[in-house]
Length: 327
Image (cartoon, rainbow, N blue to C red; front, side):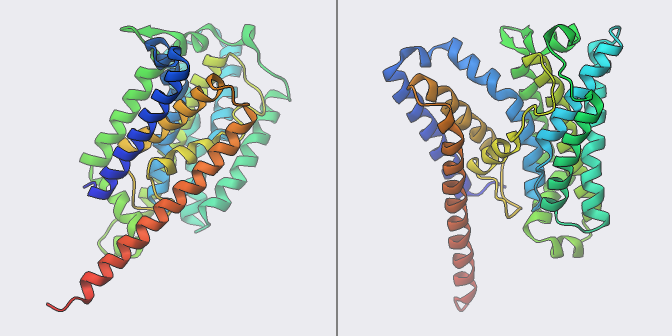
């Protein structure tokens, strides 16, 4: 169950987001329009999909640095498949993207669980390996707008019930993740695994299977995001989404997902995505150079990690103090 401090953190983050939006809106009223809100939501949808997968990995004390490379490789392979097989429809292409992403995610999970390698080392290696695979698959060439399958380009640009399709897809992923973590035993076990892996093993939680699950889900969502990214921007190339894994991790950390494992919520992660979306949307409005965006994101990560670490230390001291009080 979500703790009271987690709720306060989420409320504080929401208040900060609202304050930023109002401050920017006071300078540029167009920022507070419904059209701009839809633009921010649409721009943040792919990030939200990736964050849901990354959150699962972080809950288990892991990290998936290969998420953006998985996205790029899957997007390239789907673009190549669409160019070679123009008769493919939307369902086969989506299933292909999810299947490729899942396979790439399972490679991470297999290396981590069966060889007991650190997740940061494994996913750093696959980050480079998947980037190299993009170059091999495409022979270094770009696939541009006129070569992208119309179905791939059409899906993320559709409107369903007045909202962009990307927003609906991201909302479905967020809802599914919330149900999984709240109502499924496997989801609740991830918190135990990240909180204390030794105790989780003693009570019978299958650690290897849960780790394989989270990396497979992270990969599947990265694969789906890859197809949507290529369709939205109508291009596939080797450096697609390079460095985007840092933005994904930033959104998780800002939303209160602990890099130490066992702490985090879907609501908090969504607020982290919204924070980054609002900040990225606000910087051009207040005429801040785009080159400062990465620096600002890095500063926010450092501050968020420091705040979360401080909160965890205080929580740990309070637990020890309660244990030391005589009955």
